[in-house]
Image 1 (cartoon, rainbow, N blue to C red):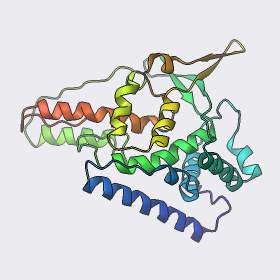
Image 2: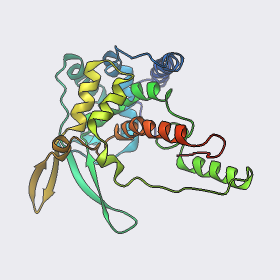
Image 3: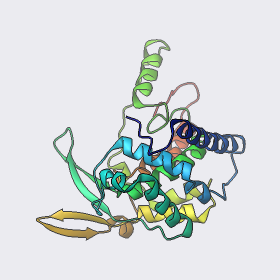
Image 4: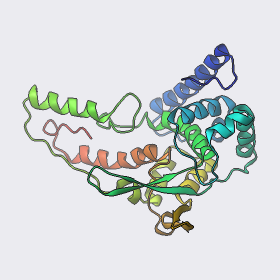
Length: 272
């Protein structure tokens, strides 16, 4: 169900169109000027239309509460627009600070457990707002062979491409590889350099660095344990954070470029 947040449907449509217009402008600029670095993005992040769409997407994804215990029902009981106005003021004034992640463990198909770092709702909304802005920029740089975590693309499409090349193009060799624990091993330094290649707005870069280094809180035997391995090792982007898939793609692009440059032309049809 689409939540109007107390806005008239016509006004909500205008909000969506404004955000799409912003994204299109950023994408076109990035696509037409491959070397351009975006220096003024922070004011886009706290635009109220961007925050409204970010909250809607966050609400549609549902998800559990963070360390502050705040749930969507709590926000909607007090009024989501009032809540967003307060969050916007924190962002605009520079008072916003990410809260620690709530660590939970979920079972994997192989019987092992995977850790998820769950941000508070306010942090998820801000991450989506940043994602709405940055994804439009970095989407212009993504390689055609990248399928994961991209708009209107998925792994099934990559599989269909493999089928096309093997069944119709006559290719027979398929290399199936997997990156072990990729999200938890992304090095912060090289990742930030990948981001800085396109982003020169220091406020946006500092916020991303704060998200990468945020502490984790886990409930063990009724006691809260606070750790900060990512900050100490300078590695990892928490699975469970909304911004992590985009960061993973931005960093992985460098490996795809190396793979495609080293592969022999017209012999290897990569779909990653």
